[in-house]
Length: 204
Image (cartoon, rainbow, N blue to C red; front, side):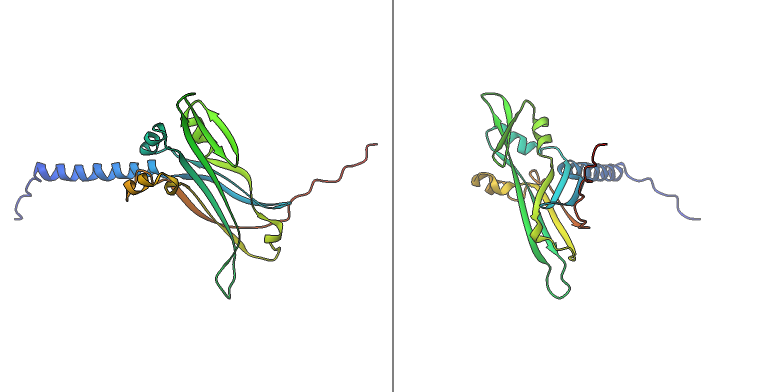
């Protein structure tokens, strides 16, 4: 007869439950700190190549605390357009960058988003974040950069840019994941000639 099974000590069960709970908490934390890329597309337009994208994320608590203390928080989107070459490394034919600067204005108690010389003020942080989560019709390459017979793809990135924080804060961050917020994606381009409107028909 086989010996009767011994009951698992309560401490062992507790350790297992603690480990599972820690893994679930870590998984939830990783999701909370990430960026969901909801839309990324590129289309050929009359004056080149235009990109549209949309993201979903929440500002990390550390970044929000710094923002309320007067620290500007920067978000950067970058696109590189590359052409496939079988005989050599792929050629970069165009590159574009867009930066958003998010600040808290204590006198007016509003959030301000600045990009490309334009400024907007918002009453809530949620409204301010929504304004910088994406862009539509962003021209990233000129017509001369794109050849009809070429094979192209683009490398896209969007992130909270800690490199633009004050230097003492950068040193203090170290390897902290509290400010880690970003997404990268590659997209193969299927380039078609821009659509042209039909000619006006004469009225009868």
